[in-house]
Amino acid sequence: MSPARCHPGRAALFLLLILMALPVWADNLLIVRTHQPLASALENLKRSIREEGYDVARVDMVNIGLLGMGYTSSDYRAVFFGKAEELDELSRNYPQLVPYLPLRIAVFSEGDSTLLVTVDPSTYREFLDGAGDSAIFDRWREEISAILSRMTNR
Amino acid sequence: MKTRFGRTISMVVFLSIAWGSSAFGEPDGARLYAINCAACHGDRGDGGIGVPLSLPDFLSSVTDEYLFLTIRHGRPGRIMPSFQHLSDQQTRAIVRHIRNWAAGEPKLAAKGTPGDPRRGRDIFARHCARCHGPLGKGGTGTGVNFTRLHDQPVVAPGLNNAGFLAAASDRIIRTTLLKGRRGTPMQPAAKMGLSIQDVDDVGSYIRSFEKGLENGGGNSGAAAEPALITTSPLPFAETVERIKQAISARHQRIIREHPLDDGLSTGRAGGRKHLVIYFGNIRHINTLLTIDPRMGLFLPNRVTIMEQNDGKVVVSAVNPLRFRNLFNNANLEHTSREMHELYSAILGEVSE
Image 1 (cartoon, each protein chain N blue to C red):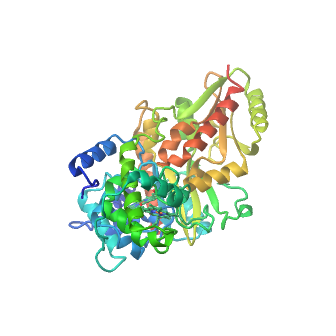
Image 2: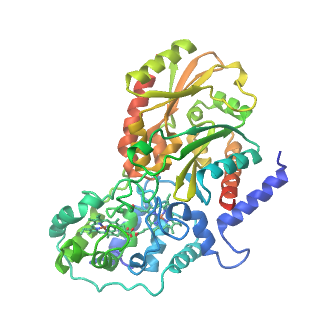
Image 3: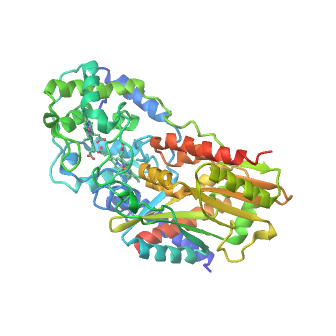
C-alpha cells in the first residue's frame, strides 16, 4: 500500500496532506453519453428540454471547419434553452450570470455515440457567493439532471 | 406542464439511478460505472476522453487498491475527477465491475532495487518526455474522440501528479514499464532500449516527483469573479459598434449576433435592449477543442451588451480565469489566460 520505498508511513501521510490541500479542481461539469448519432440525440435532447418546461432557444454550431483540419467529424453543437421570465429576472439582478445564460448543453459525437456536457447548476450558486435566492439553482439542477438522465435512457 | 408530483418522481428516479443501488443491498457496480465513468471511458472501458480501462495489460498491471484510490482521488488537473462522494462500498463495486473485463488476477513484477533518480531523470528526458511531457505532467488533449488526430489514440497520463502517485505503488510503476500497455503507445522498457537498471532508475525518478508536487497547478483563479463586467459611457448602439470594432481589430471574426433571449417564447425582456455577439478565430476554437472537447460550452467567444434598469449599458463576458476551474484540466491554463486578455482588451475599449 505504501507509495514510498523508504519511509512508507511518512510518505503516505505526506501524500494524504497534499491531496487534502488540493485545489478546488471541483468537478463542476455534468457529462453523459448516449448511444445515438448526433442528429437523433439533438432531436431527443430538444424534446427532453421541452418536457421539463423550457424553451429551446437555439441550436448553434460550435466549431466551424474542423473537417478541413484533418478531424474525423465536425459534429459539435450547443443547445441553448431557458425561460424568458427567468432570464429577464436573473439578468436584471445578477449581471455576473449574464454571460452564462441562457443555459446550454454542448453536444458532440464520439464514434457511434454522442456526449452531452453542461455546467452543474450548483456552480452558479458558488458564482453568486451565496447572494440571492438559490432555490432556482437547485431546481435547475433537478431539471437538468432529469433531462440528461432521460438522454442516457433513450 | 409538469406537475410538482411528476417532478418529484423523476428526481427520485434520477437519484436512485445516480446512487446505483439495486433498491436495497449491494451497490450495482455496472450502473455506477455507467453513470459516473462511461461518458469518458466508454461503456466497456475502451476509452474516449479518458484512457482505456479494459486492456489486459492495464488490468494485469494494477491492483484493486490502485483502481480504488484513483477513483477516490482522481487526477488533479488531468480531467479525471475525484469521486469523493461515492462511498467505499460503491467505489469497490465499480472496481469489481472494471475487473470483469479481464480474466485472472493482476500479476505484478517483483520489487526492484532502489534506483538512482538523477540517472532516471536523464532517461526520462530521453525516452519518456516526448509523450509524458518534460516534467512528467502528461500529454495534451484527450483520448479517442473527434478532436483527436487518429495517430495518437491515447494521451500519455500525467505521472507528476498527486492522484497518480498516491495510487501507484513502486511495483505497479515497475510492472507498467516492464510490460508496457499493448493497444496504447506505451511500449515495454526493452522495446525502448532500456535495461532493468534503467527501469529502476526512472522509477525512482517518478517517485521523486512527490517532493516537488505543488498543490495548486492552475488554481489561481479560484476566487476570480465569474464574469468580466464593464459599464459603457456610450449609448447602446454606439457601444455595440465600438465592441464590434474592438473584436475585428483583434483578428476575430464575428460569427453571429442576436438578442440574449432570442428564441425564447415571450422575447424582448422588459423592453430593455440587449445583444449577444459571438466571435472567434477558427484556429483558436479548434485548438481549444483539441485540448478539451468540453470547452465547446464556452465557444465561440461571446460578449453580451445589455441595458440595465437604470439605462446604463453594461458589457459582460465569462471570466476564463474562473470558468476554467470547472474543467480540472491544467492544459487550459495558458489558453484561458489568453482568452482573459482578449476579453479584457475588448471590454477595455468601452470602459469608463
